[in-house]
Image 1 (cartoon, rainbow, N blue to C red):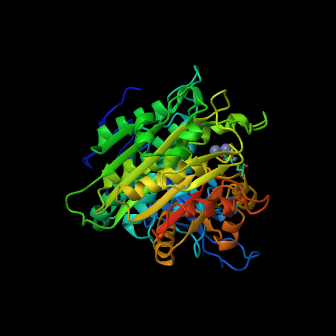
Image 2: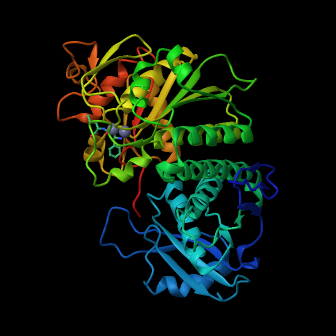
Length: 493
Ligand code: BES
Ligand code: ZN
Ligand code: ZN
């Protein structure tokens, strides 16, 4: 795919497939000529009392904007529920052609995460109406940097489309967004705006990889896409094939890959800023199964097609590396993606086979469909060998996590309380929804094998924790967070 490179309006950075321009305006919203002025609103009535009459609050200090909205807000037709929209044409007293009011819920409980979703709603609202540029009034009451970040991130992820292969697709991408802030917030907002844009674009980059069908996203293609991205943003990227996997004695990874005609790829991305201390070194490991048929433990036909998204953990880590390269935190980061196809064939591994993992541990492979933990066993061990002192892995690992948490929360597991505190703090900042699940020793007991050090499946229940207990065997004492994203990586809507 040809990369369009355009510079972000005045903010001095460019990125692959970048189509959206952002700028900041320090002007009275009522004085701005625009096709669409977006203003947020919340409900000031008591958060606790459900029966209380809504009290609309328009989140702008511009009297003319508030006046233009006063009548419709007083009518009770709009109650500022999260993502509720109300459009006014030719709003009285404003230079804007239209004003879009978007709800963010109760004032007492609304956060920047509600704002981010509302900014996404603005993009989704504008696109089908042919509006390619709009202006967003940054609401007061939130930290200016986080506000700007939420707006740019929300608009960019709201702009994402999945109609790549429709020949009748029309480009309705949002071209430019201006964010209106008080003059005193300009510099904080500029850095937030850029951060949100980098994070949003990196998410869309990952989402585009995940959406690709398996015939257009083989391990080799995933590696190529990662390498192209690394080249763009200045990361080192090494891609290894079967020979290297053999040298590294990655028997668990090789066992999964051997059933496919598509060769596996071990993708290693490295971010090594000169101003970072030698330690910690963060290791980001991703499951990159570009298609999971189940192997000889074949999956049923219905919904097998979804298994093209079994590389979502890998895609998430590739996207994270892109964001890291552009945001330049002062910490070293290594990412290891284990990319392979899990296929049945005359060469495929068979239920009952024993494989030796890179760490030397033997694994009895009782179910070839529990392949994610096999490739990750070697990926985690390799990240440690490369110097990672802290590990995070992301994987569409188990159907069981979907049963437990549905599509609302992803599952998280951790072997170290200090690491968990850090991770939890990051969750609060990002607005990502993860729910911690247990990792007791008893789950490990279910993986005892009579003939090998461990087997790759346990009992029928508690599958997400059993899978995590399997991985835990390969990280040793290294602080580690395991993210089982099987339930959240795919959205039907
Ligand atoms: N890729 C699947 C898990 C999955 C299921 C992801 C549904 C997304 C949606 C994984 O490789 C798998 O097949 N896991 C098995 C493990 C079982 C055999 C112990 C599962 O969860 O059924
Ligand atoms: Zn599987
Ligand atoms: Zn899988």
